[in-house]
Amino acid sequence: MFFSLSELSLTVCHPEILSVEKRKMKLLKIGLFTFCISPFAHADCFNTVGRAFGISPVLLKSIAIKESGMNPAAVNLANRNHTQDICMMQINSTHFAHLARLGISPERLLLEPCTCVSAGAWVLHGLFQHYGRSWNTVGMYNAGSSPARLTLRMRYAREIKNIYIKLQQKRNRDQSEALAERVVNEEI
Image (cartoon, rainbow, N blue to C red; front, side, top):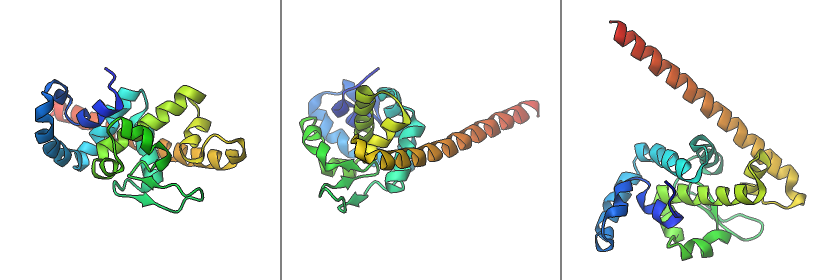
């Protein structure tokens, strides 16, 4: 099932919210926000958003680690082009006008980690649609598509790929350990 970005930002933690009447949405936002800021919810956000956009949750998490160290309140005002980057996915202010049309403000990006992950996936999904799925395109998330920025783009892509590989290896180890533990417990 695919959601629009605005629907996904509200429903990523609780998909059943889609069936709730609009007048009840305001009351649910407080509870949703509380759930979404927990560490468990972060992992669930990456998984749910990744599935919705057709992007590996591990790739999304790799970008969040590189961009902000997973800091949902991260703000960067030091870009040479005088733009800013905010939240754990470091959403660039060049996207703010379009996000505003979807009902997503910079404040929501900073206060709602699931919304931030959704916006980052939306940006990356758009790049994949336009340029195809490649590490070069992943590099565009940070360095843009200009041929003059190829070196920066590829450096960023290489760093993301290294984080991605480490996260995948950890995930595989954790799954193997869980399976081994299950087997041992069944034998006892």
